[in-house]
Length: 132
Image (cartoon, rainbow, N blue to C red):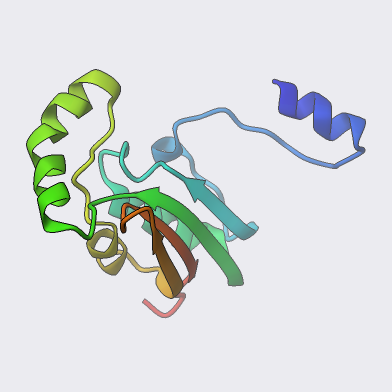
């Protein structure tokens, strides 16, 4: 992997794992920050993955998400729902996921959220909730 070579070149002590996130199992909470970009659309169970992130993140850590989801415009959201099954078959990506509902169903807590591109893109700053 190119990232391993780059880390070694910069003398960064690191370990890389290539795996499906739904199959990962980290002991304890080894991460200060977890970043996920454009992935909640593809997981079979995105709430499970967010709950795993909650478990893996240190209590003082942060979970940063940049995800696409339903447009805030009703006509565009309707269109997303109509073409979702075709899109999943073609590229494995759900267009009709309500990102706020997914996060509310998980254990993580939203600190801040910005929606851009007509409400299609969600920029989310979250933190783990260790009290659930």
